[in-house]
Length: 556
Image (cartoon, rainbow, N blue to C red):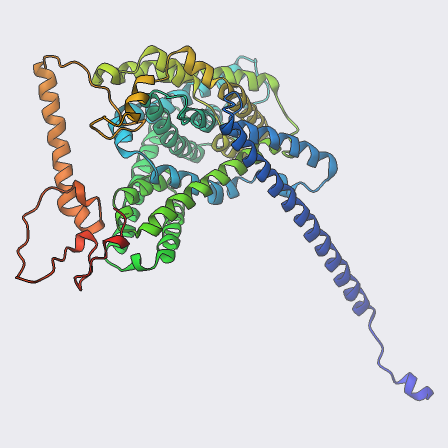
């Protein structure tokens, strides 16, 4: 018996250590899972509460509290509670990569896909002035003011040797995100001037993409370790920005046409679930492709949405068409809510150690001045080509200046700010976002009333059943008395309609044939001849090759 005991295999102490470590790791994993479950529960309850709050805001017309401002304030409260109750704040912290690659794409794609193209392109000149040149003006005004404030000793917390750091901040803080303003302007009860709504919406979408492109372009020329920088690099940086913007638009349109061609020349309309799923995949494919090529994913995605709306929406079955619009709209609403919640929580969960109140106030003043020098001069330029009610009035310019709110894109870019002064810029950006969203967003309705931006005439005509033309809040243009046309106006009109006519013919005769489009908008074609007793079959009308009428499968 003793021999058997003595010959029993001995267990190495390292085995006991490994077993103990395994049990400890398993217990820690279980605790982490429980914490994540509780955090997810809190976040879901918070999102539900914010969506219900948005319902009450819309239902009872609480204009002084936009939905975005409500979500941001709720986020601040939840962030404060989380900071006091736990040390593990990972799930409550704002993650820029999660924002750019998961939350932002549905918002941008939905903006392009549901865009009123006529209202947007009718005002594309003014929108481009505000979004591109206005963003550049704002960038340099804010950047130069902040840099020289540091140079003169007014601000001690930022770099006073390298102006490129201040220009980076100027680019990110120029990203306009008027979600709060648009949520109020979109209310049918207010009857907001259609031109104002079109300008604010168009500028906000393009401005975000341009601000991000400008930020990333400047970041390539910024060296945090030293001021090795010369003014001669600015033209190169601007040229690089223009190239990136142009190529991003090309990528978006090309992938939109590719998707439209696939839908046009296949029978995907028999499988609505696959149609909708592929649309989601093409959305993220476009964004990922542009980002992988170091272009602007937002710009590419926005123009892909416009392209798909113009061509591919007519290739979809009615089920997929309705489903895709509603799903993207719903997803955009949820992601916007999540973004503002996380922005609010960032006040307490950001672990900021260097919050310079003086710089935050200076930055806010610089933003207001930059916005003023953006809107007023460029509106003067835009009015050279605008007549009558389409002119941008002084009152409208004031509202446009007031509508330049800052939001999640600016804050996400600030979280990616290079250099040693990241916290100073992040806290200043967060302060500006909260102020403009809550205060400026809350006073939007008062500003609309004060400056007469409620178009009661357009609203009553739009609702009138006797109106001869289809009216929307963006495309309606009230009839004005006929006036004698000058020679210059006549020449300008001929050039405009000549160029427009060339594009329309190319669009009708080539692009819509191969990629899909509104058949009713195509120019009349000769009626085909059929043999006696045969069934007409027009593939462009959604009919199948067998002669069966399958037009109900495609949206018209």
